[in-house]
Image 1: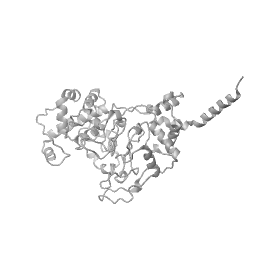
Image 2 (image 1 turned 90 degrees about the horizontal axis):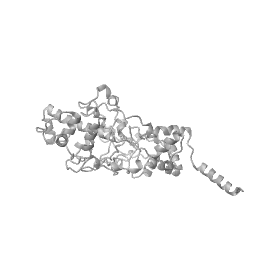
Image 3 (image 1 turned 30 degrees about the vertical axis):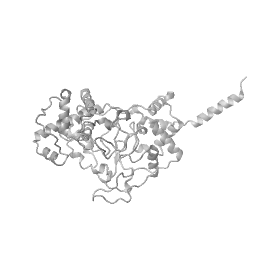
Image 4 (image 1 turned 180 degrees about the vertical axis):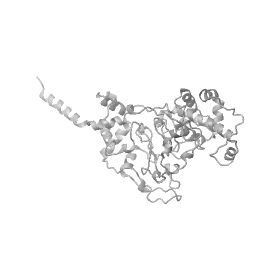
Length: 410
């Protein structure tokens, strides 16, 4: 005989379960397709680096990436900051090579789909970006002739296997640089033009091989990808991939009232652009103006897409050609970071000013104005509170918790 009480309990449980599980609307699924990793377009070619997808260049780049001897102390390699087991980031507020730098390390997976590199976008290619830490005193602390000499001494055959004949380094000067002051600068300035070009070309090729390796560091699927990819196919996700009710509600907020997707858009959860979102200034005595400080100099960079060491035709350097140089537009603006794996790499923002994801959400809800009382700094640049681009939003404590759950699922 059927137990009516048992049937009632089962029905009640089913009704309760159906009420507690958020339903994904056709709109939710349409939006979810924008974010799953399977929607990521093919990796675009880099016209400025004809070796970008050369396996031999990538192999050389991998050797250089992990080589501690490419630093003035022989103790620093790229993974000091870009640690493979931490998503090629370091998990500390400010990067530390030979010494501490003034910004946080950015993760490497997925950045090859962007057009600008570093928090301020001062480099327009991965190969050009890869060169900068070598010549930064607080990072690798070398000069370009030192880097070239080390690489051609240790890896000449690998270098020539990619780039052809390498120059004789016997008559190269030691420790000269156009970026440093004093004897290093004087030594560089007195070099013949052909010797400068020889050193620069080897240095640029080193960057191109590093970029070829970094282009192989692809983003990895997470539970959010697997869940939505199954749903988009009309299938039920595997048990291990199921998103909880708070995580699903968090996604709805992410694409809805929280307006996170204004900047954190697409499969990489970034628009690859620059925004001032009212992040606290980390040093009032020497504020970081972000992209505003460098837009006037990018086109003059000898290692840019338009420079002598680029493999691109001028017509292929469209980002530089159409780049805005409006300083006021970029006051306090920094690159939107990807949110993939975001829960694994606190603290947050360009200088680690915010310690937790909970505090990041509070920051965007409260929308503080840290610049209101700052004077003009040098007659040209000033940080102004009315430039905060973050949208005004309201979230309850429950909504904050749901949004946090979704971010952690990434």
